[in-house]
Image (cartoon, rainbow, N blue to C red; front, top):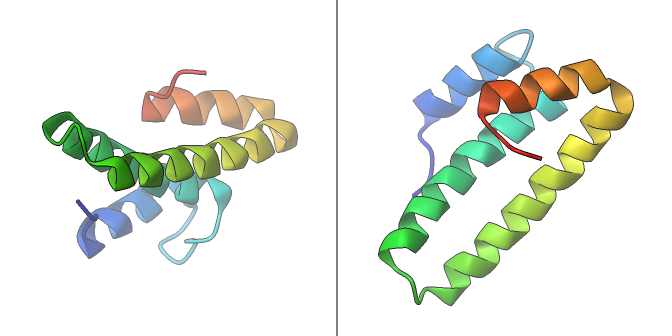
Length: 89
């Protein structure tokens, strides 16, 4: 259910400007998206897992706040990011 170090490093490299740029909003959105996808797959198998549902809603809200920040800062970067990640608005 959690993402591995290798997967996280791959996301940082792909969405950050460097391997050390782990704090940028784009990288955090990419990591949250990966976690959301993992939890969604878990929820499909375990329909009655309410704590997973709550955790999923918390992650979705956190990602939404990051995306709102990116949208306010640079709308073109926002559009490119949601297109790369396959997120719909």
